[in-house]
Each structure stands twice: as structure tokens, then as C-alpha cells.
Image (cartoon, rainbow, N blue to C red; front, side, top):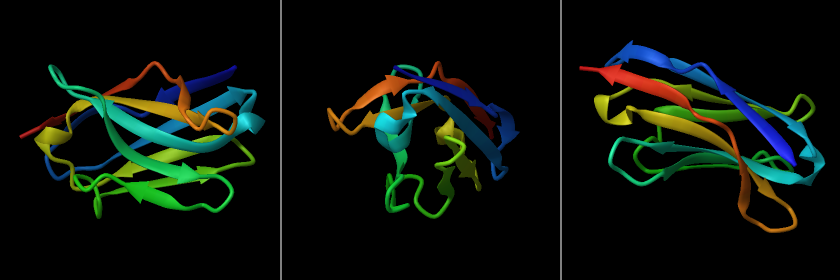
Length: 119
């Protein structure tokens, strides 16, 4: 089991910034990548960004590319999502997730943190 706890959400005006954190605990050695997803009201959960521990390689959804940055500290089992130039359409609950080496899937999820961007 891997436990994930997000923090850092809140209310911000359009054009502003927020920084989300995700702390992982438990069987973190089984994790080879971590990612951020989001779900807006009435919409399906969508991928935002991910980072691979072994290479530090990152990947972003087109909608956030150039505005969001994912980073991580493997030794501390923490990942960060720095969100700049926020738009009202970024409003959603943001979830942290870990991808297992054994399954290749995002098997563990945090409880989510609300991000609201006002226009």
C-alpha cells in the first residue's frame, strides 16, 4: 500500500499561482512514477502531469504545458506541482497518484485538493 496526501489547494485569481504538494508513504519503493490528475465538476478525471523517478523525465497535458511544472524529491517521496498563469478552466479537484512498477498503472490515489481560479 502507498498512502498519498495532497496539500496546497485554494482560491486564486486568474493569472495567479499555486503550489500543490503530495507526500507519499508506505511501500513507496514499488513506485516508478507519480502524477497529477484533475477533475472538474461534471467532467471526467483528466491527466495533468507526471514524473518518472528513475530518469526525472516529465510529461504534461497540452492544456497545462508551459504553465505547470512537476518536480519531485525521490528521497523524501514528495512531488510538487507548480501552477502559474492559472485560468478559470483550471478549476478542479487535483489528485496525486502513484504508478506501480508491478502493474504499470496508477494504483494509489490521494484524497484530492480543491483548486479554484476566479475570473
